[in-house]
Image 1: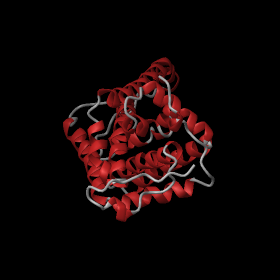
Image 2 (image 1 turned 90 degrees about the horizontal axis):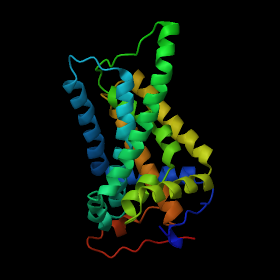
Image 3 (image 1 turned 90 degrees about the vertical axis):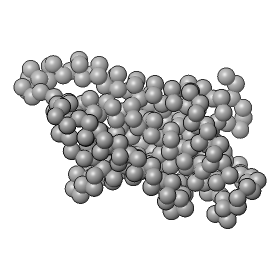
Image 4 (image 1 turned 180 degrees about the vertical axis):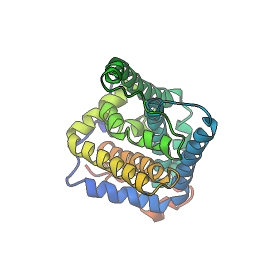
Length: 266
C-alpha cells in the first residue's frame, strides 16, 4: 500500500507531553458524558465478569491474558469517541468507521498475539517455577476491579507492540491496513521520543494500579485511566499525522452542521 505524504508521521515540537496532557484533559472536560459512558461500560463489564464467574476457579494469568485482548479493543472504541469529542461534526463518521471489519480484526489480532506469546512463555517457565518454588498459579479471586486492573497493566506492553498512534490510525484513516497502521505508528513513536512515552504510559498505569489497590472504587480508577490513555493516543495521532497540535475551538465544535475545517500547522 502506498502511503500518501500527508499520512507520513512527523517529529512534533517539544516539549509535547504537557501539551498532549492538557489537550486530553480538555477533551474530557468538554465531553464528560461521552467518556463517562465509556468508563461506566467498562465498570459494567467488570461487574458482569465477576457475576458470571462466581463459583468458578479461574487462574489469574488467564484474566491477565483476557485483558491483553480487551485493551486494544477498548482503545479502538475510544479513538472514535475522542474524534467526536474534538470535532462534533465528525461524531457519526467516526462511529460508523467502527462497522468496518478491519478496524476490529487488527486490534483483536494484536491482543491475541500478545496473549499467545504470554501463554507460551508461561507454559515454558511455569512448570520449572512450580517445581523449584512449589507455588502454583494464583487464582482469580472474583474481586471487583480485578478484570480492569488486568487490562490496564498491559498498557505498556500493547504500546510496545504497536506504538502510540495505531488505534486512531485504524479508525480514522479509511482503507488503511492493520500492518500499515502498525508500521506508521511505530515510526511515529521512534520520531517522538519512544522511551519517554513508554515511561509515561507505564507510570500512569502503575499509579492507577496503586490507587485502585489502596482505595478500591469498583474498578472505576483503572477504567478512567484506560479511557484517558486511549484519548491520549488520539491527541498524539492528531498532532503527529494531522499536523494539528490543539483541540478545535469549542465554539466551532458546537456549531451544528457547520463545515468544520481542521487547522494545520506544519
